[in-house]
Structures are given as structure tokens and as C-alpha cells.
Length: 397
Figure 1 (tube, rainbow, N blue to C red):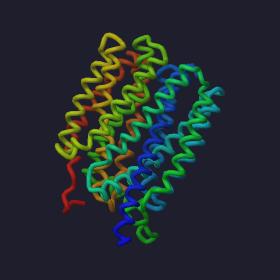
Figure 2 (figure 1 turned 45 degrees about the horizontal axis):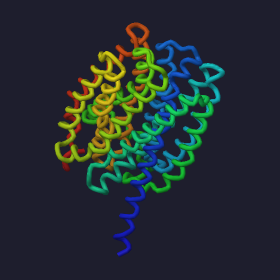
Figure 3 (figure 1 turned 60 degrees about the horizontal axis):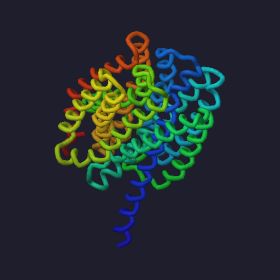
Figure 4 (figure 1 turned 180 degrees about the horizontal axis):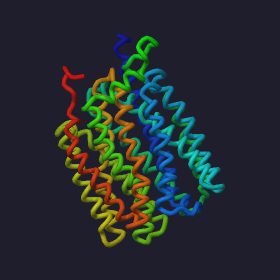
């Protein structure tokens, strides 16, 4: 009888731990994002130079993601997330302490920040897919809703500290310590990953990951995730700046509209699983892509702050399910989840690699606000690639 009770307890504990891992990751991203305008002003950066600085996060993430499949397969999702939470603590502290001294320490800190987020992302999605499989229902978007809850909380705290004129250094260090300690303690609740660790004779998870790069379905899912990651990342990096520069709003208003975008993403991710179970992945994400396009148009072309606020809400709601649904699709086969999630996440994070300098370049020439129109092009690509998200049949690899 005890063998029937223990797994249920383990799944519930793992589910709680995964929620905390996602929430902590989101809080970290928003804590940094809310201070981008102040760091930009402190360093005297133009939009294009700011885009290049933000590129350090994407560069760190790409390096990390290329290694993440092998790291997670060898050491497990629990150890990976715990280690990356510790690295994130160091990274945000380096940014907070170093930014008054120039660009170099910020770039180093953001590279480490991106590296930590990359492997953390793959590991918590692998554990989330394990929990989803054991529960037998769509729950991955709700884990990503936990990420969005973290971003909303981080954005609201950020708006408060900006309004109170709390120094960037104090804010980032305090956030780093809180996130690092809480997540390192929480992930002790992770259960074992379904995939077995590689042995020396197998060539390790690296060989499996390299083979996965030749799978057409995995690559199409990666392209889909890239488009939605671009839509999400552009909002996170540039909404506050676009509102401040494009609409002449103050920093607090820019941060609050950024928080509205994140709130809409949270709502979409929390209520999305019911829609996915009823209508299927493909139909739901295609409708949401259209909704996000409508929000972008309203945000960019609307006449005032009110329409920008409404546009940010629709943009965030429409972008909400793309990334988590892509992760679920990549992890349909638990035995290959780590490798496939690593590949899909690597492709997706190319949006964060190319997005900041692209929007920054456009910002120098046509304004950041109008430059966000580039998001619409990739959302159209996502709509075309969405067919790859259909669940694998039992006979498929």
C-alpha cells in the first residue's frame, strides 16, 4: 500500500518545487528589466548600444543552452537548477555593484545572468514535463504562469522601488539574494527525471543532443518558439523604454504598463490549459498569435497612453502560451525530453540573441516604438509553423 501513496506525494512536492523554480526565474528577469531605463541613463547608452549590452544576456543563454541537454542528462534537473540559482545570485550582484563603473562589468554580469537562466530554463522545463506526464493533463502553461507571476511581482516591486528612488545596486543585490536562497532550497522537492543518465559507453547526452538537431519536427517547434520568444522578449526588454520615449511618459508609468503586459501573460498561461485540452495546441496558439498582432498594432499605432496600455494587455495575452506549449511539444517523449527541450530552447533563445540589437538598430532610425513592428513578422511565421506542435502519436519518435 505504501508504494501507492509515495508517488502521489512526490508528484505534488515536485509540482510545488517546479512552480517556485519558474516563479523565481521570472522574478529575476523582471527585477533586471525594470531597471533597464536607469542603467541605460547611467551609462549614457543610445538604443543601439543598449541593444548590444542586452545581447550579453542572450549570448550567455545560447552558450548555456548548447550545453544544457548534456548537463541536465548527466546531473539531473534538481542539481542544475540549484547551481544556476547560485550563479544567478552572483550575476545580478555583479551587475548591481558594477554598473556605476561602466559597461564592462554590466556585460560580464549579464553574460553570467544569461548563462544561469539558460540551463535553469531547460532543467525546470524537463522537470515540468515529467510532472505533466505523471499527472496526465496539460499543466506546463501553468508552470509558465508561475514564471509570469514572478515577472509581475518583480515588475510591481520594481515600479515601487523606482518610485521610491531606491538605488539600482541595492535593488538588484536584494533581489539576487532572495531569489537564489529561495530557489536553492525549493528545488530539493524535484523528483527524479524520467530519462536515465548517460553512460560513458553511450557517448553521453551530447551525442543525443547533436542527433536531435537533425529532427525536422524539433526544428519546426524551435522556429515556432523563436517567434513567440521574440514577441515575449521584445515586450520584456523594450516596453518600458518604448512608453517612456514614444509617449513621453515618466518611468513609473512605463514600468506599470510593462507590469500590465506581464499580468496579461500570467492570465493567459493560467487559464490556457483548459483551452488546450479542449481545442488542441495548434488551434489555440494560432488564435493567440492573431490576438498578439492586434495588441501590437494598438500599442504601436494608438494615440495615447490608454491605448498603449490596452495594446500591451492584448500583446501579452496573445504571446502567453507560445513558449510553454513549445516546451510541452518538445518533451512529448520523456526519454528524449532533455535533448529536445535543449535544442528547442536554443533556437528560441536566438530571439533574445538577435532581438535586442535589431530593435535597438530600428530604434536609432525609426524609434523603438515603431521598431517593435518587427515582432509582427515573426508572429506570422509562428502561425505557419504551429502544425508541428501536434502531439506525437505512440508510434512516432
